[in-house]
Image 1 (tube, rainbow, N blue to C red):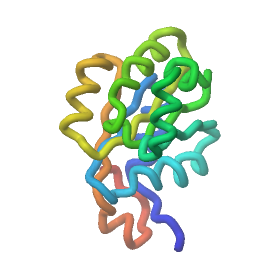
Image 2: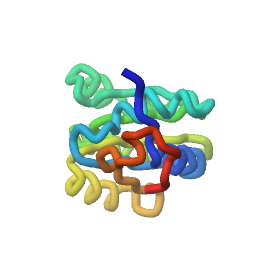
Image 3: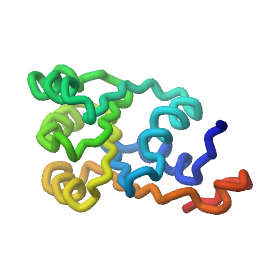
Amino acid sequence: MPLHPRGVLPLLQARVARRAVTVLTGARQTGKTTLVRDLLPRSDALETVYFSLDDPDERLRLAADPVRRLDHGRRVVILDEIQKQPALLDAVKLLADRRAGHRFLLLGSSQILLIEKVRETLAGRASLLELWPLALAERVDTPNVPP
């Protein structure tokens, strides 16, 4: 089944290109992971490194040495389901501040808890976007309409 282009994709690309930290939230099953894993890499020359915090083993590996494991230079580091390990935000902050070029894209569906922790730890560093379910224009394959 072909993927529907999302109207928020150009805005997401621009934010990731300009900001050290971008946070994409939204209700469950709105397509955050699909957008980032399947559409974002195809639409730009962004090199990405993807971590799913749904995986308990991944969470353990990242918790053991977060700064080293998240330090991928100019590649965009994607942390999916960040609300499952908010302690990683300290490492994200450190790396974002350490040198220019680090880019992080944080995904999460527990919006209230996630945004509160983001505001505390990444104040002034993070750009927030919310993904909504497919709009009618996206469903019928008409030109993208900005959200």
